[in-house]
Length: 208
Image: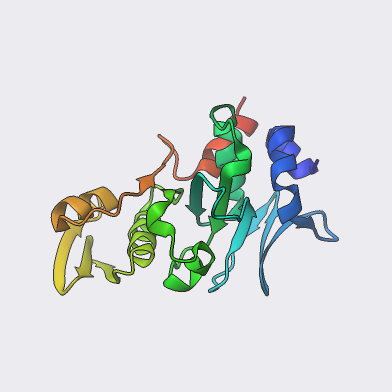
């Protein structure tokens, strides 16, 4: 049991699930390894690396995995599983992958080309960056590159030699799929009223 996770209200079963995939630094902060880079979570700060490597947790045997969850930070994975633990009857079939906020094909080598046959959910934020990460992750998993640029309150996506333009408010992975008629068959799981699952968790922990 880690005191920071306990203060956030993380149930013991979830702490036990993630225990093999983090350690504690000399200051008591949570540290999640992305190879040579690290995500660090303290009660007053949260540092997430920008790297081509990723953090992994859960069952890495593709033959046994039922669900894959891809997110922008390890703490987002912890928050999501805590909030939804009662609905997860078989945690031994779950696999979590944190890739930061710049998704690319190099992050998904661990899925060994089987991404299209797995049930995959995306746990990125409700903001524009999170929605861009949804699309960049989906396109990388399907080996269908998408270039995304934002400016003047518009998002422009270049995909399969065609441009698609959206307002910031209207842009989402679902909106892009409908506009392009290309469907990635991924779930985007986002909390209502909050940007991230971690924000929701902290609200419940500190505003009661």
